[in-house]
Length: 451
Image 1 (tube, rainbow, N blue to C red):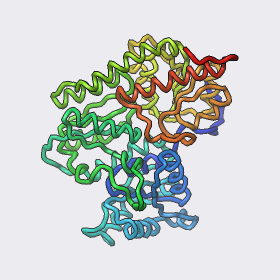
Image 2 (cartoon, rainbow, N blue to C red; image 1 turned 60 degrees about the vertical axis):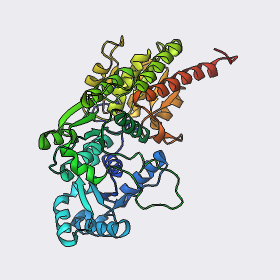
Image 3 (cartoon, one colour; image 1 turned 180 degrees about the vertical axis):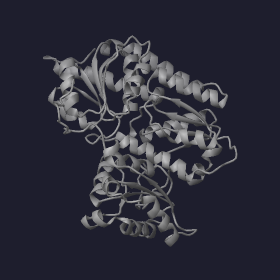
Image 4 (tube, rainbow, N blue to C red; image 1 turned 90 degrees about the horizontal axis):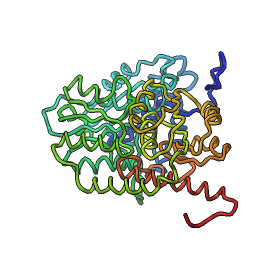
């Protein structure tokens, strides 16, 4: 079902974010990098504030600050001046230049402008420049995120001798998830290059002085050597046609492995088995113990959540992973929705729920929360799983909202939510089960304190 009538193209409360925002987050995960938006000042201000509200960390996003005059005559001069100012103030190792709707519409030739800038102001001390086209009318923040990573790999990776490392491209996950991935690869004795790695730059410790560029991120030296890796592991079920993993396979011959986000038991099993295959080692015992505790908790809590009906929304890869996990624990996902439109979400969900005694849910791509609410009312649901932008709908329908993913603006700790691995599944299972119990408890006319 859809709200959209013939010729009705307006969006009401979008279930997606803009493309340059995703690129800005990806660039933030590279050592010494300053994200730079070639467009109006408002774009950078909005995205900076939006990102800060989720991660609760300061983030600077530079801008070429185009105005009406530049929209007519071009923004090349502003871009060059902005790059000079950022270089002088921040002394970055890398500037990630992402375009916006304005600059793509007026037709600025950014690669040419950057080449001219390099000839005029380049030198051994000058920062590296990476550019990526990210007009919001051509995709969501996920497309922008993946496009930025692909651009970094294309423009910075050198031909390299075999070095025994493994490239890990996790996609847009939380800082806590990245820390998990770093830990689990180390458990297998794998020297992993995780790109991007914003686990410190967007979730760092308290400091007495504010650094203009926080420490952390994937090092440029490691990115240079990605072409000599033993393998690339790319996480996601709805990835675009060209990704960093595809570039490394095509241009450098690095073997590519793909698997979905390791959310839940089966997906984590597949991920750990892949690491075992690459490393030649067995799965460490403490991971098997965590798996056993998760299974035990699922047996204990199954009676509270079995048969509950859920709406799941957010980025497509996250929705696919969560849907498979919900099917494992006995919750029926009846509607899986996203503002993205890769065309691959239904296929990913079918694979994630295969042989899990779960009916295929309704899969809705390219929808907003008006669409989601209309469909959910007809389906009759018990809980909602997704980010904070679904709060208005959940409150209106008196449904509990399980907050996961990005953005989480009405709670603290969004950057510390662990979604991946057995530990992430354990935390999600406990959160979902306790939320269902709390709802039943609150709706009881007498209340109870013992189950």
